[in-house]
Length: 190
Ligand SMILES: [Mg+2]
Image (cartoon, rainbow, N blue to C red; front, side, top):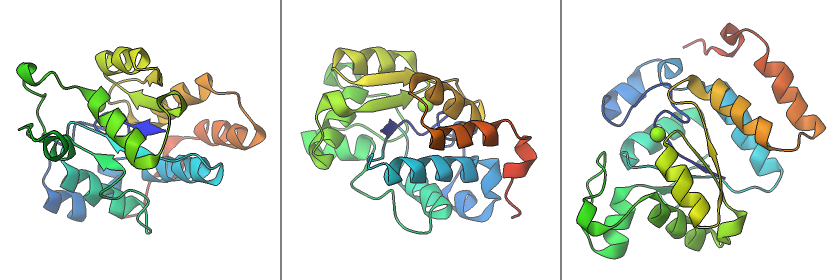
């Protein structure tokens, strides 16, 4: 499963507005519904589903936040892809935090294909979660499954949308029960 970062798993657009210093010092709950995201990722991993992030944002910010959410490095240099990776891979200039220049003819599909290669996955096996419709349409053309999630409505809403698209085994039902609890139950104490 490939997650977009900004506004899909985060509460707001972090890549354009926060520094790495803020990521490491401010309360985690400002940026992400961390307990819920962590629970979902761990659920996927238990079921043998690989996870990755494909984002036009900044790799340092993404890894900084993920290292706070997970004590073990579930997300690393390899399974987090940003314009930095595509620039190196294709020898082009695509700056992190920006859309690719039109003449480069690049889009999120280039990130998906790079991740498929790195993770040894067939494109048909990949599911993209993203709050940008264009990325969803393109990913489907590539043969991937893709789910459009609400923009910047916190991970709770992303998860609700995702669960609707999957057959729900008993374990996922636990998530649904958990989602119906007030959101204060998920707040971190820090
Ligand atoms: Mg986004």
